[in-house]
Amino acid sequence: MKRASIIIPTFNRLDLLIRCVASIRNYTDIPHEIIVVDNGSTDGTADWCRMAGVTLLSLNRNEGFPVACNRGLKISSGDTLVLLNNDTVVSPRWLSNMSLALYSAADIGIVGPITNYASGPQQVELTYPDIDSFILLADAVNRSDPHKWVPIQRIVGVCFVFRRELMEKIGLLDERFSPDTMRTTIIACVPNSKAIECSCAATRSFTMKEAPASRPTLMPRIGLSSGIIRFSRTSGKKFRELSSDKTLEGLC
Image (tube, rainbow, N blue to C red; front, side, top):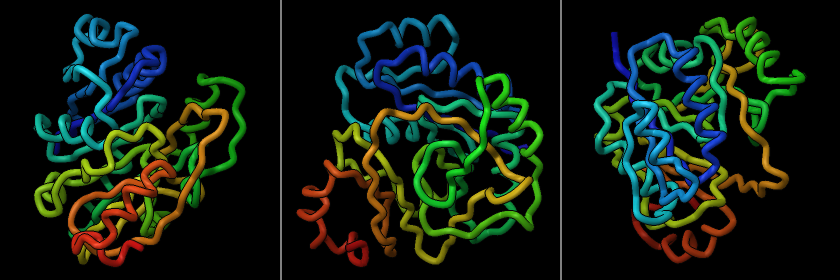
């Protein structure tokens, strides 16, 4: 069975990280490792990770989302690579369902879940009063069905599941967009590949995300290039400065 590396960049909010890691340990039914990359937190995150037996990379300062992800990816050992926000709660069969989709065809590049808080087709409107109710609801709907996988070109960076071979082919996240904490969207620019989402109707992987009071969202077009690019409002100026770069052709 393939092994997964679950990489969680984090900056403070230890309460959310503890909840996220607990859900991974409770509901991940395939072999995996958890790697936390701490962006210089001051709330005891590093001490908790050591106490909890979680693999930790501790950075001296907040280097931003791309750098943190890349540090985790570089020390990962899994066949399946997962980039997961620290403010998520995963549910039963979340990763096994997405892995089934990911490895169902050679040309599938990236898989993402449906969630309560995202832009675009990944967001679903489901009502639950608390996390226990969310888990019960997710347990009922997380049933894998290939007929309900939806091909898409854009996956929000709540959770990002892909093969190691993909990283080796297109490279790491573009660190020229660091530091930037207003992350909204991760786009995979994968030549001759497609991204699919486990979504729509009863068979899906459902994750819960802590919703901030306000989160601006941009929806840039996808293009073919090398690397993984991420966008946000504060990245806009930097993106325009880099838009003449050959590796970014077709993205703007």
